[in-house]
Length: 170
Image (cartoon, rainbow, N blue to C red; front, side):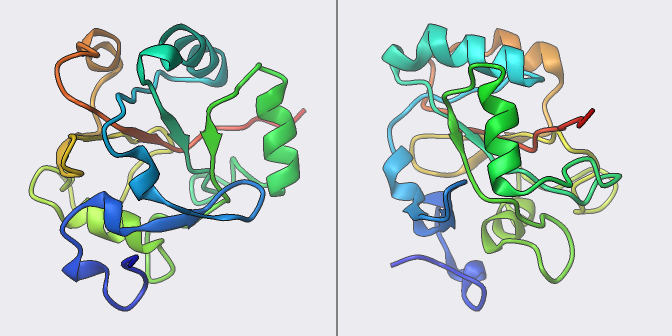
C-alpha cells in the first residue's frame, strides 16, 4: 500500500511511497529498503560514486524538478539521454514538483519530518537538496553540505540520498 496524494501525512516511512521512474513505470520505494545510498553534486560524481559503491549496496535516486529557474525543461527522454552521456546508471524518476500544492506526496512527507524541515520554512530552496534516510525509512538529515556528503561513512547506516539534477542544455 502506497501513501499518495490524499494520505501522505499518515505515512510512517519512505517505504510507503511510490513514484514513476524515468520510463513511466510505477516503483514502490520499498525496493530500496536496506540499501546504502549517497549522492554527490553532479552527474559525473553521481556516476563515479554509483560505479564505485553499487556492489556494496549504494543506491542513488534522482528526481528531476523544473521548479528552480526552469533548469530542468527537458522531457523524461531528454533527461535520461543527458544522464547517459555521463555514464549515469543510477535510478532516475520522472520529473516531479517538490514545492507547492502539486508537490509529490513523498516530498511533502519528507519536508514535514522533524529532521527534514528547512531552516527558513519548508520549501525546497535549491535543486540539489538532499535527504538522508535511515534503514527504517526515516529522515536523518536534510540539505547536507557537500563535504558532509563525501565524508558520511557508507557502512554506518543505510542511507538514501535524494536529489534534483541540474541539467544545462546547450
